[in-house]
Structures are given as C-alpha cells and as structure tokens.
Length: 85
Picture 1: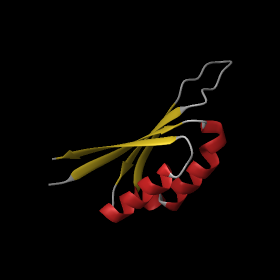
Picture 2: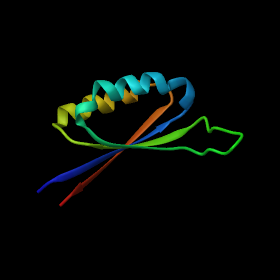
Picture 3: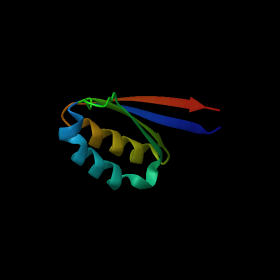
Picture 4: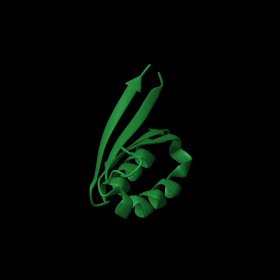
C-alpha cells in the first residue's frame, strides 16, 4: 500500500510570515512534491490569510520535522490528510 499525504496550512498574516514560511519550504524541499497556494484576491485587495496545500513524501520523521517547523510560525495552522491505497 502507498500513502498520499497532503498537509493543509492556513497561514495568517501571510505577508508578514511568508518569508519564514518560504525558508521552511526550501529547507524541506526534497520531500515536497506539489505546492498549491490559495488566497482571496481582487484587483484592489490581497488577503492577509492564505491556504497552502503540500503534497509530501518521505519518512515519518521528515514529514513531522516539516510540520513542526510550520507550527512554529506565528499564525500558522496545519492539518494533515492521509490517503492509503
């Protein structure tokens, strides 16, 4: 069986925390297969909050280290989805 693991990250104060979040993604880049960023945007307004979906691979320890680094960011919330097939 194979697991597909998706980490959903709600990043509040996105503009303020995006630099440290990007550093974490670069640090753990080898286990990130896909990254999708979602935020509300219009012509005049850029949302202060955003959701990022990360499709990750690797050992449990590697994924836990990524989760812990993200949790250390002020305003970050993380949820994990695991699909086994």
